Image (tube, rainbow, N blue to C red; front, side):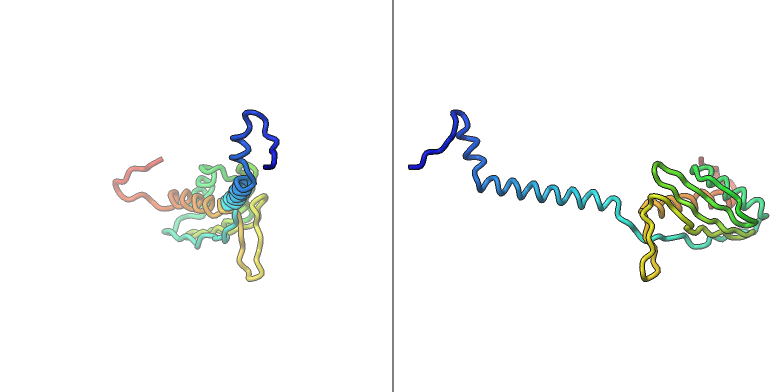
Length: 162
């Protein structure tokens, strides 16, 4: 019979970690690594850039519309810069990300559109679609919600919520 080099006390480890057991352990480790890499990547994948449709409201003075847009931006830490009459440039710096949008407005509507970004994985596809970090769409939806809260008058008797 062949003699094995097993030191006293190591015989159990040698049996448990035999060649077959080692291959299974390596396979399990490889599968865990693959699922970790792809699982972590899923959280950072790109999505289609989806600018919101134009928002309409009852006519009001341009100054009131501009004030509502700037107040909504300030509430969410966006920086506003007036580019021209009826145009505001919004910039959001959040952690290591920067997003710049263009907000065009009139006395009865406004439209938010993507202008530029940094560290958001933006890319334009050959078919014309645009891809970006998933947070972009969420941040713009939140901005629309804040602006709309300021443009739509509350219902009679309704309480204002913070």
